[in-house]
Length: 275
Image 1 (spheres, rainbow, N blue to C red):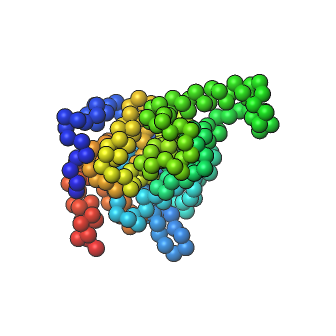
Image 2 (cartoon, rainbow, N blue to C red):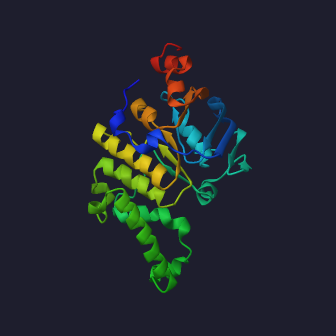
Image 3 (cartoon, rainbow, N blue to C red):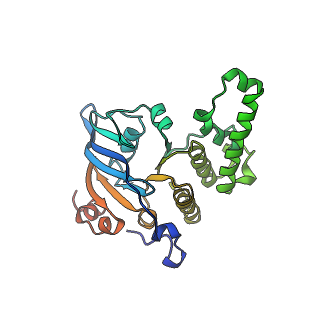
């Protein structure tokens, strides 16, 4: 596996000391099938409040399918998901968002012709109370509400250090910064749990270091619980509190980064010796 992204003397304080709370998300015995293809088989793990929980595995292991079950995109045939003590066999995407779970995607789904600030503003949709007519007229309470939402978005833009691009069409922004905009849109929902699907895919080392810093700061300063899919093992081992490992839709490892790093089944899956 790759060496640490950050040397010990440069590690963020969150990497070394952090208070982890009780279980906020509990996934039990999830199985997902598409016709005769088994995408997930009897997967169980939990996520504790304020931790960074990584899901790793080779390509085709079922990682994104697992996130899709959590945020309501897919309906598993078996199993349940418990969020803050409430158990569901299935949650739709809107219900999940209203409960405080936000998601970024592996492939960027930004509105390329819209500005950076307007893309992030779309993350405030569930928070807007005014009706469409008042919003269109920007009259009275609707105008005051929009100003309040834009203030929160401006704070996110400052936090992500993309002030210089706030009015730039997002399609004209460099790829690494587009990834920050995607993160910003999810943060605009003020989530309790943030699901990140390969947030560092396609980035160079410097961009990965920046994104790691933002993820750690979101977890530390905002107190947001994070579930992360990532292929870069240096990143995973540096910033994760616990790691669950999938292979061919089955769980083969679960524990701290050190425990997973020394798990024979995990080593075999990544080196290919078990196949």
